Image 1: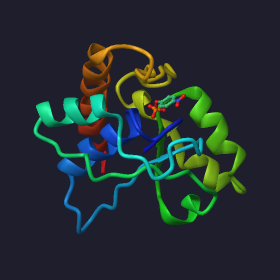
Image 2: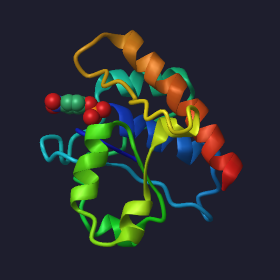
Image 3: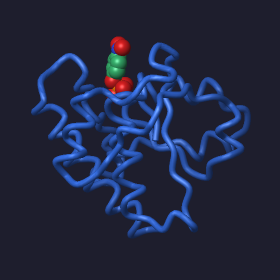
Image 4: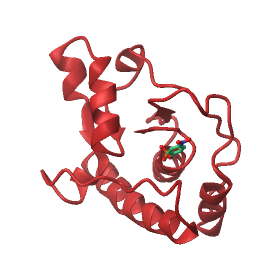
Length: 144
Ligand code: 4NP
């Protein structure tokens, strides 16, 4: 699960998908394309919205996406088109590129809809992000 800062959207996506899979079968992690929040806890608003939905994401720490992630993961879900471009810049093969997909294409196939960046808004933006990611993760596991 990849966004820009790895403090708002992708920590929620990681927490939600983790809660729906068997951790002995599926490894889920998240990262940011930027380095600004490496080592940071998720944004308090993401922690709050996760908690409201029964998830504890407070122990996650920000890390930056790297080319090595193409070796370690089968699928790479990005939150928006800018994340997608930045991740694709680090890809080396067509197999790498094929791993990368916009997460909301799960719900809206081929529509290339972004998960809106809630960072500069209020808590309601985080609720919206949570609901969209929850729906997308349900579809991801259905197809696994
Ligand atoms: P995220 O949100 O990419 O969903 O983690 C953001 C977090 C931090 C910043 C931007 C977006 N920032 O500019 O620091």
